[in-house]
Length: 376
Image 1 (cartoon, rainbow, N blue to C red):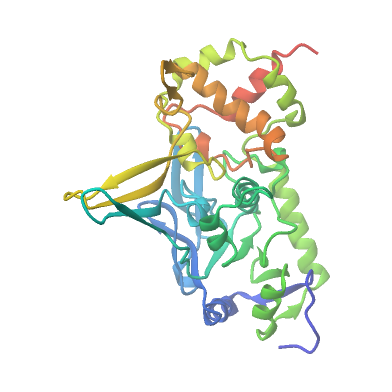
Image 2: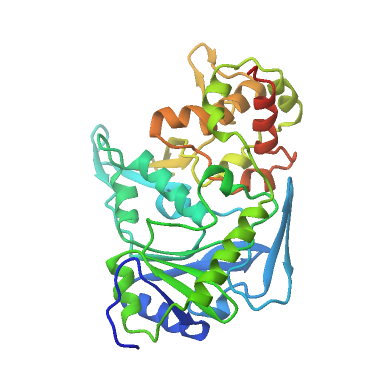
């Protein structure tokens, strides 16, 4: 370790083999380290203990309704863009037990609330768009007037190591949404992968403490310039774009009867794939599951979707009875009314909804088509 004191905001270099020691240092602080791995021919987030667990040399080919992992032969560990899984599930799991009801006798019940019990977790290789999505979810679950204790327990015990993006996928459009290809804040550590080293930026005191005892070196101008060239390349090679994203809120909300929704409705399967892979969608339902004897009932929160026909069913009928109205609700909420609710877009430009739509519906194409029909 060189002489000198690391400061928050400092950028240093770390030889790639030393990344194993970095993971050990994180684990010694009590964190379980999760990162990108190859499973079922896609990228999924699982326990990692070293560089050998990461998808070295891999890249992904993504287009509307298309995803393939390919081995490219390079020596990078963080070149492949994410698969269908997002980090949302770490804080807002697909199924969460809220409380358990116990029958004490034939008439009386007692309730036991589920207590937060999330072990510390380190998320390794979080993409800038994914970090932006986590911050969007924070606005939903950690409001000033109401905070979700289960989400808070998981969120405050999480260490985040970002991997900046130098090779975006075919459905990425984070530049349009202002969420990439690099993160500037909200992380503990971030890395930019160069040929032989990781450029490491310190974002918090926790990150500084992890890196302090490792053999880091001050970042040379050559490495910093190489990273900047990488970011410029990523900006120029986004797979998708929405040129006039700032016009979307007003344009979409003032044109709810646009004929483009009829065209989408002919193709959309209302399958909910887009909302399940989206890192910011937060619709849920509450279900009660009883055991066979009827002596115990678990109340659970489960993921739901605005594409589910029963999601808006109320006494007397459904407020969104067809695919057209459900798709319109989804895209206008994501790209327009979300701003008014939470002060930020509900879309971070990750492109998952495009890649994993079996009908190949492209949110950027639909947004641009809707914009093109708005009268100046």
